Image 1 (spheres, rainbow, N blue to C red):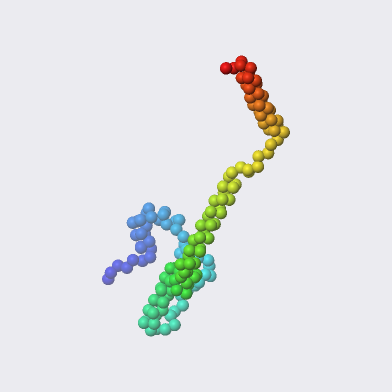
Image 2 (cartoon, rainbow, N blue to C red):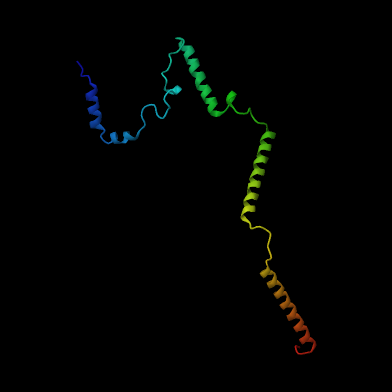
Amino acid sequence: MAKENTPEQSKTAQQKSTPKKSGARVNRAQVGGTAVPGAKSTLPKQPPTSNNPSQQQAESYNRDMRRRMQHLGTGPYSESHRSTPQEQRRKRIERRKQRLEEERERLRKSTPSGKVGLGRKNLYFILAVAALIILLIVIFVILRSTHVIA
């Protein structure tokens, strides 16, 4: 008779052959993953309603196609049935307007306000500089007319 491995023998054989891998498996999630208890995926699978293998194959194909169409967003699962070129163009123009408006807002926030306030000190300084320039011009004209400056 052939030797049969008991569960205890198979466990010891695995431990001897892969001592390094046992530490790596500690971090793995338990069977079932992160599904919430009571979710549809955790419930036991119900047996098929018919024993006809061709009908079961057709149902399986239908499930696969339905999942594929949902993933691609086509068929009755698509949000909008093929938008027209005019609709696509309108959406593109709206996105462009939105981007430009956001850029304008960003620039408005980054630039200082355009209003320059003239306080009392600034006003006196500007008037003093203007008076000094006028005084220099007048002095230069007088000296020129009296032939002091050639």
